[in-house]
Length: 174
Image (cartoon, rainbow, N blue to C red; front, side, top):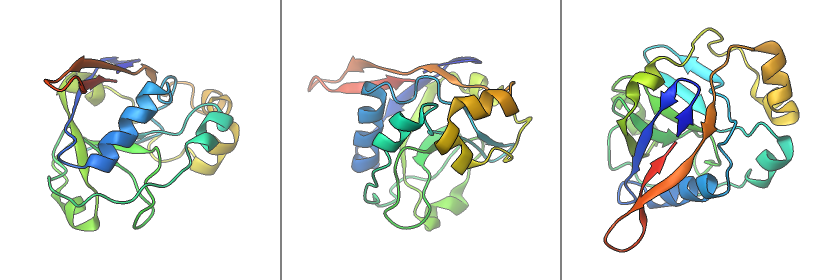
């Protein structure tokens, strides 16, 4: 990912959470994360993103996927889908800013880790904390966020790069 704070390279590890890894790839390939704001930043906990700035694009991806078993811990630098309960993952993700093992028993299954650029993630502004209202982001998109939270950091672009021995992408740059 190229973010407003710099480049972040993410290694997706399908064996950790295959359904989450597959959804993330679909979203990246569709350009879903381009322009997405980091709308929830809780210092010493998480940075959350994944509501598209265009409400029409966001609604296209408001499709739930089943949960993956938790096979890895939510350590600093891991990426995990946010949920609102069992089998409710859609497009929202968070990056753990510290080791968050307490999330493991709550069903939060990491599917990737940051391999470079964590310093950029650490610089994402926490100025707005948890103030942005998710329903308003879904309804009004970046129009709402740019007006009410002008200093909010964001994903400039996210692309899939590199391939493994089977020809599948092994790293997603976000």
